[in-house]
Length: 507
Image (cartoon, rainbow, N blue to C red; front, side, top):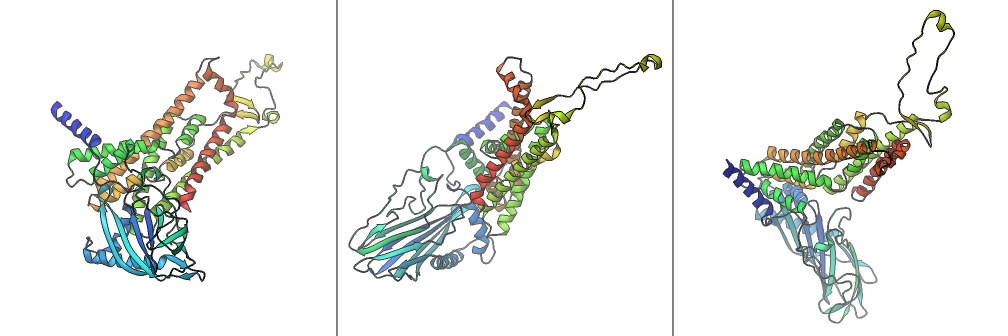
């Protein structure tokens, strides 16, 4: 028994600590669509290499259109037909105008290739290479060229333009001569967080030799250690795409998905701060934190499943835009909870003069009591309150289910791209239920982290309430009259922050 347990542990450590799999997720994200235009100007013509590099999810979305006979495989004839069609569309989209007349160039497709490369979770990435050319006469006093790529700036991805002269010189030019990404084959590691976003270019071709390239970017080494979450993500994708799925491998994949979900929830977002402040400021209980965690699990699992159906059913749907819009909705939900808290604060706050028309303690001594016997006076137990800056203020009421569920939905509403890729990869391999199990495990991991965050805030609140007088924590009790207002404002701020962070990709 111990030997088998040791063997299983050794296998798990080998999978987690061994070399990274050859097929890894796209470095710019599973939703990215990346474009490169490399211009070469000759005295009598201009050529351009137009490359489109698609990550796993856009590739999966368009696969049904590439597979014309719907037999589940893409053969050479289908790839060639798709390449010719897409390169023709690229030529129509690319706008280059030349000379003082600003005359548009007419592109001709010289070659077109389309192919797949192994990606994450058994999915593929796709690469389209188009070679186009157009006639051009470079005049003695120089010919100005203005380029508009026609790529969609709303899509997440790398967009790069280069230009060089062959028998002519380019001066001036606002794009480099060499590609920093090696024509979308090797993205520089230090630029992944701020990918190239060049959609337009201007350069002038004149008789001469060489090229005066501006802003030349050196291709950097794309190596370097990845974060532990990225490494675990690769392992999960490798396990999910294993050709032979055994029980130990399946259980390890589920465990890994749970760890990944917990780690994902540690990243910025998901309303951890809002949930913690809400629970602490509203006298939350342990079961309230568990309620939020359970809601996160359900919402995230349902969201990944629904988004997976939408992406596979609608090829024109941009996944990153949909995620951005879900992020906006998540932030609005948190903002709404903060607004409700602020409304409750206003309702519980009354001017000090009008709050009580009588003293807090009552003494009844009437003469009639001697004749009619003793009258029992029951005094209501005092309720805690403070006279804060806004008048008579009562402590927050216990948590309402609406606020708890709202925070839980907000925390799980934005599906994790890695969970989505694992689901789609499992579906593509015919393991739909296994993919659903991995997504559920991912959601449970997220819920565990968010629940733990809520319990931590509750513990901090209890420590402050029970701290001895004169201690540092006891000093925080002076803010008790403002606790409801501060809670509402903090939750509002977190919600608005989530909205602002998601807006750029939602528009």
